[in-house]
Image (tube, rainbow, N blue to C red):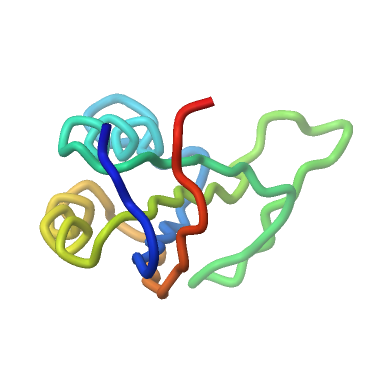
Length: 111
């Protein structure tokens, strides 16, 4: 098991639900990349509304279930591991936003 504790780095990747790379959803390609590269773990969050660089608002309405909703992929690991994977992440993306911030890991263990 990959052990992380104390000060680590949180990478957040903001993309759209309809973003595709190599014929698959971008968020799934990112998860597969992180798993393949041995990162500690990742989570995909689906937003209910948001806007990005084009300032178009994307939101979920009861009558419109198929939307290009915002998606956030979060991964926490060491600065070194995230620096190593970042070039591959950027190759998969055509738009979006990537942020990095310090995170303090209190607990990381299987259930």
